[in-house]
Image 1 (cartoon, rainbow, N blue to C red):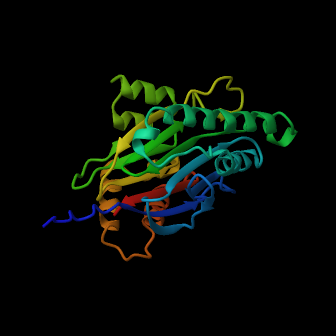
Image 2 (cartoon, rainbow, N blue to C red):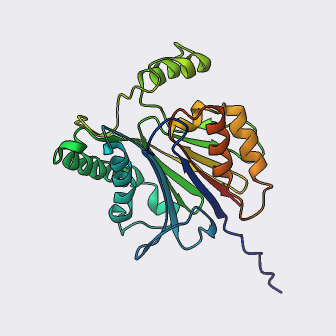
Length: 280
């Protein structure tokens, strides 16, 4: 008698997103996006939800815009909206098929968004010099591919661990000093030039060279995408505490809203945005 092996369950993603203009800024220059797609169709996701990655892929992104008047607000919107039209229809679901070319796909995506921002920024006086950061996570079965430029962030909190890891690298001089051991985390958080960008999409930046990478994931893992405003009001240990607490919240709860609300309460000087993706 031949015994059938139990079918391995495909992990599902549970996501939540939230943004707040903060206590000081007159408008919100942050944007975030969630997409579900296959080779034929792209669907925009709501602020909260849950779905399997067995037959479709997912992309989540946050962007922080910069520029005079409303240019920053337009910049971040353009950055995330372009993702919906520029996702190559050749995306496949098999990690083995994706692995060789994911960096080229993401590099092309970032380059096209950069060109769009440069074009719009050079076409109208009110959008001159517009720039945007972009942090993007693309989930296929078993693997998360990411692309990043600017000082928004991507974090990974592995299952059953209480130490959160920043996957992205801040494109600031202060970030470079921190990575090379010339200052510590506390000094980096309070440095007066911590928000001065060295690289971003659009503006006067000639070349785009996003930081790309890949991470294997499993049930219990949590990923966080956020703009720099969130980090101004929360330390790493507070991020871990809130994210772990969120795993026991009701199904229709919004962990991202809890993160943003706590950060704004503690600081609130900047626009604040978070996207939380839990592997369940």
